[in-house]
Amino acid sequence: MFLISNDSIRASVSNLYGVQYGIYKSYEGIYFTEHYTNYIKPMFMEEFETFEFYRSFKPKNYQQFITNKAYKRVIRYSIDAIQTFIFMQSGLKENVEKLISEIDKELI
Image (cartoon, rainbow, N blue to C red):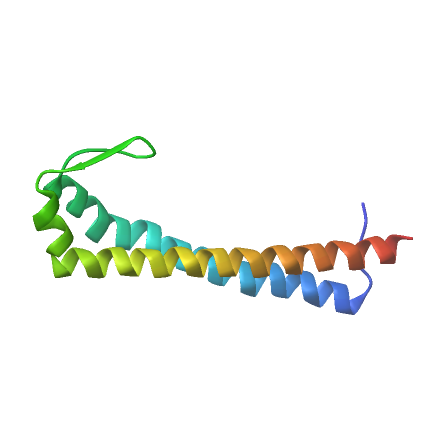
């Protein structure tokens, strides 16, 4: 078993997992649980004849759907949330790669 004796690496691991990853998981939970359950799923069930993810989306009334301001807000929020996920994932990936490099240097 390896113990991390380098205080800087130990702090980085703790920060990455305890803080950064925790914030990401919290945001993910809010989006995927609350936003999907409260807004996305009801919108699909109400306004779409079919909604098979990655296959087919067919609105009951396309014109009515695209002019609905409430649905535009839901979709706009969804796009913003996904962009935030991508940004957060990119930052996490960068920090993990940096930490792996630091650990590799320490092990040499």
